[in-house]
Image 1 (cartoon, rainbow, N blue to C red):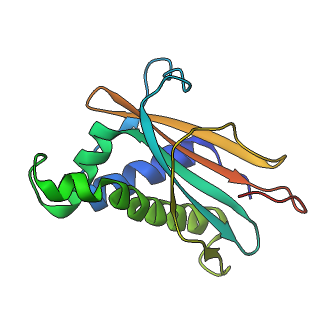
Image 2: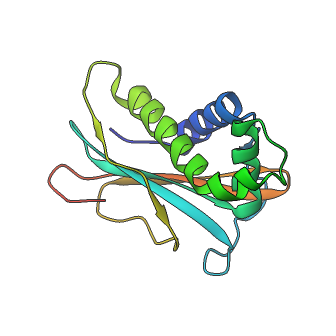
Length: 156
């Protein structure tokens, strides 16, 4: 099971458009310097026939727009500030499930962990297959990444 950048871009774009009316495309410039990029993230681990994790990272402006769209609220609604991290985690669950179905088909059974918020973007872990997909929306970059562990290594 080896994810590709194109697969991550395609699945993330479809899920973000369908779940949150957030339209993204591949980033057409150099990605931001991650050490100084003001982004929040979320991670969900999976296990089963393969194990690993999927992450989504976005500046708060993008995460707030995601929440507003999912809630059907204006961007300045109080609910948006209260739920934008939850909206990222819920969207990540859907992205992860769709990625696993694309990579492994409908038959294998995977277990998803509870998504969790992340504060620091770290390098991909382990010695398995990992890929970053940089996307853009409204002039902002966002990142979807997937790490699949090598057969007997631990990731997540």
